[in-house]
Image (cartoon, rainbow, N blue to C red; front, side, top):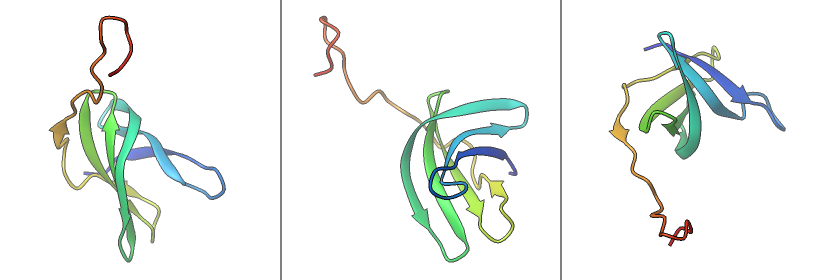
Length: 88
């Protein structure tokens, strides 16, 4: 699946993804769950604003992005707010 990805560029170009588009739907990346590097590609498992986790693959040779699998899992909230609004 080919997708369009917008990246944050800090000290280097395309440092990390911040949003992506699949078909006509835009997704904001809320967290990078994990990232790793292969010989020719970079991989990012990201949590999006729809509550799902996606795997994004950046092909270093041509600069394109793909998603080898559709949304993988529903994310759960990491904190449980108490009655006073503070996470415990």
